[in-house]
Image 1 (cartoon, one colour):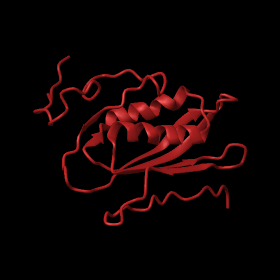
Image 2 (cartoon, one colour):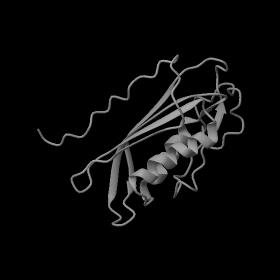
Image 3 (cartoon, helix red, strand yellow):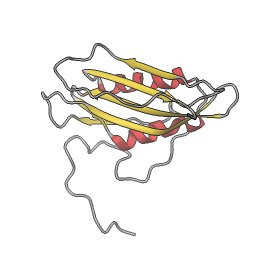
Image 4 (cartoon, rainbow, N blue to C red):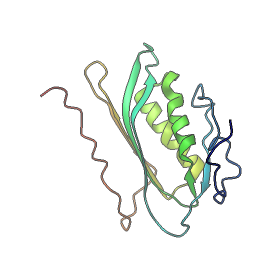
Length: 162
């Protein structure tokens, strides 16, 4: 069946994308997932890009039980931005991946820094309790610039009932 709404002209730098606008199988692991980037649309301007994944899942590497997190990624692009569908598929690839919270969180941030070479990037990974103890993991690539508005992540700490 043909698409009744064919896409318009390609945005600059999107010709080489392998996933956007195509049916794409879910990657089986973060190592297999393809993260893609496109040229930043406003070179020379400093702005913050935020991605929020409130339903992130991975597996405990010891028990195989699911772990859940609310992940917030903020970054200031230099020359590249991450293509959002590829990021969504990358994050989803952790569903069947066994790793500790700290490993998942820092791995995500490190892979984005390697791909994008942003001016600055931070991740806040707010993990739901396992064994009654929530674990929150925070990492940033360097000192945040003071002349760019970087909003607080404002994810409340886990309180349980009460």
